Image 1 (cartoon, helix red, strand yellow):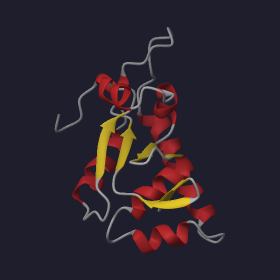
Image 2 (cartoon, rainbow, N blue to C red):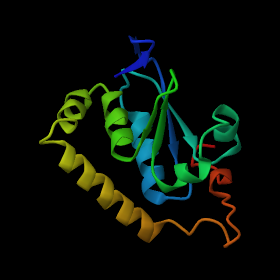
Image 3 (spheres, rainbow, N blue to C red):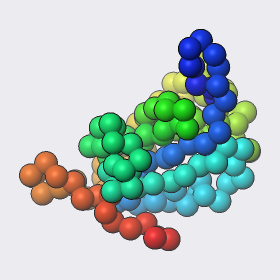
Image 4 (cartoon, one colour):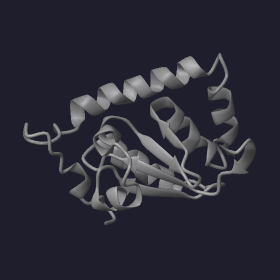
Amino acid sequence: MTAEAGGRRLPVHGLTVLYDARCPLCLHLRQWLMKQPQLVPLDLVPAASEEARRRFPGLDHAGTLDEITVIGDRGQIYRGTSAWIVCLWALAEHRPRSHWLTTPAGRPFARATVLAAAKYRSLTAPPCGDGDGVCTAGTVPGPED
């Protein structure tokens, strides 16, 4: 993966993964990602947390609770299916699979996987906020926080 800047391709040296700290599946995937050998360092931060808001003040933080969001060290923003693919791309053992998932044959599989995860998440994660439009999901500590 590379970022575009003034027509130049710039290598990605780090990725920040914003995950929903209230979601059992998200927490499981966070732990799994942390255990994988990484070619590109992944920094996992709870979505909509104070830390996420500090690092990325211009980001739609409510949206980061709706779907996985990954931010590259050059300002790239990946959401949904693309975010999952870039996470796999960062992992030593899964980079070849990530390349396949970007092909016309692989992309539908990636999308179906993300939709299945979203369905599971909707059944297991508590609702966000109390109807006042404010979500405190990012303030829930993860298992190692």
